Length: 393
Ligand SMILES: NC(=O)c1ccc[n+]([C@@H]2O[C@H](COP(=O)([O-])OP(=O)(O)OC[C@H]3O[C@@H](n4cnc5c(N)ncnc54)[C@H](O)[C@@H]3O)[C@@H](O)[C@H]2O)c1
Ligand SMILES: O=C(O)[C@H](O)CO
Image (cartoon, helix red, strand yellow):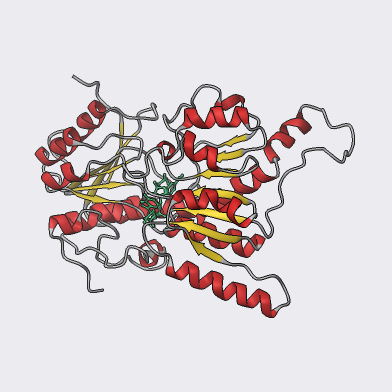
């Protein structure tokens, strides 16, 4: 029997019982629910990662919907418990939903929401920050300063890499990968090589147009190339004798991307390259990465995500050529409040029987605080499997 889980309650007399497994930023998401007759219960338990047993206890005998977190294991047990409690709606407060067994949810008739779009730029900005921090050795230099080791300017002190005019590689050129690519191309005049299962037409058009603009300005144009495999992105450096300086990972995590970066792929990268991961930890074989970092001191990584969060693989914390941050890529106030609103509206929309928003890439009307959100679920990943109708709004 799980211990009772501590909660905070809003609108105790609300008709629909909605649970959030964590306190989320802002209060708009709470208002959106309480204004529509929901009783909102927020778990205030101290431990960061809730167990399945804790969540079953939270769900109890009557629950209409749950907002959960990417640290939780949403599978058969939880969807069955939610369904038994009368619940039909779940939303992750994240765009990635590799922690969710969508088939199990569908089997129990539970919709699975996620929060795309609102975190695209914030996440891409962190990937760009990690690229810069790694290229210019910012963390190492900061530690050096604070340790009182600086005793005067030196020609060799913390020499790093220039990004301008080099090549940026993007694996997974979806929303975030494309936004990151644009930042690096526009900001640092980098050339692009990308690998994705699908053609990133808008990104290609952007690079072509920007290249023409630079040319008309008398500057060197930028170029793009769509690689036919990830290996081609890693190898490109040798082919064109141009340093493929920075490679950033932005695919979803599934069985096709698990350990996409491993011992073999690392061996194909330039010894002085930079690898950034703001997708999911298991996209990189972290043990192989630690070995590679040890053997190649000029190879640098910027990591926001880790294979066994919250832990790092042994040795990673000691590597000076690694910049590590605790899964904060989407951590801007605007984005986190927007994610909370989207997650709440995914759950509310299903409870109310609203249709599903037709374009999950344009969620602006849901995050605009100055007007009421559309009567729709912003993003339901199993909408088709559940036969949910699409919004005409
Ligand atoms: N670190 C963070 O805090 C953070 C924040 C937001 C998102 N993410 C992660 O980033 C991922 C991407 O988010 P998004 O909004 O850009 O999603 P998206 O669906 O727009 O983009 C994912 C892209 O990956 C591509 N892809 C899928 N399988 C691939 C493969 N085998 N090889 C190459 N490309 C492949 C898809 O075609 C798609 O273009 C999320 O699923 C999530 O896991 C992490
Ligand atoms: O998938 C996501 O949304 C992130 O990992 C957290 O923002």
